[in-house]
Amino acid sequence: MEASASTALYPVHRCKTIYLVRHAQGVHNVEGEKDHSAYMSPALLDAQLTPLGWSQVDCLREHVTKCGLAKKVELVIVSPLLRTMQTAVGVFGGGNYADGANASPLMVEGAGHSGRPAISSSNCPPFLAVEACREHLGVHPCDKRSSITKYRTLFPAIDFSLIENDEDVLWVPDVREENESVAARGMKFIDWLWTREEKEIAIVTHSGFLFHTLNKYGKECHPTVAEELGKHFNNCELRSMVLVDRSMLGSDTPTCNFPGKIPAGLDLPSDVADKKHAENGQV
Image 1 (cartoon, rainbow, N blue to C red):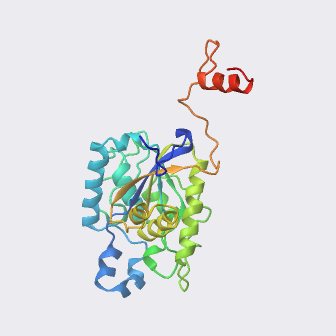
Image 2 (cartoon, rainbow, N blue to C red):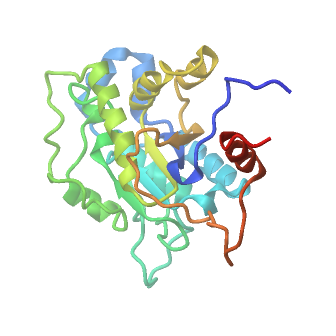
Image 3 (tube, rainbow, N blue to C red):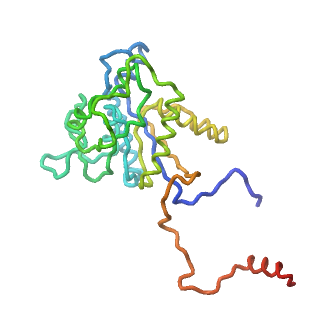
């Protein structure tokens, strides 16, 4: 058996599994495909999901439940826009919320013109809103978020504590964020994931953010892998990735490793003994 340079080994405590999800179909996707100038429409401010988008959410929810992923995810990170939060809670949230339940709902009934029942925050991972994984900033009203005050009424159980400003100060009407800036922001976001203790994290975000970030990482990969990373995400598509800490960003210690030699005893490996034997000039 010949050795291969195409494989690599990494300690498991220096790896995380991330599940990347693009939001389901939004009203801006429909209108923008009909007429690209529609992306400039104020009527699409903080665009919500379409009825078809909610059907896509239901299909992905069924998939993550059947394949067991729903029970593996320890944290859901979500871009704080209406369409991504609707997608995130619809896919990874609890079941229908019952009045009088102890925990706050993840989403109240009918949030964002959804026509959907309230969604429970029970029996599901925590949800954390993070601005760093937003779509291109600026110009397109569909990519401008609403106030955090409003979001807290619609999504009571999502944690918005990392967002500093109530109003959207990142979006400006006359400057669209450059692709390189989106990619750099995405790479910083990926680095930030190493500050989290969770090992299996779902991230619900946007097409442009995913495309430019993953293409940046793809430059270090084999062309076949780079091509796979660089494909645009479909609405409500999920891809699983292994995130490897190659620069000691993480500080996790292995939880499953066992040091051995308990109880202690003589255990000099034969190959080490042979080396010592040779170094001592013994034959």
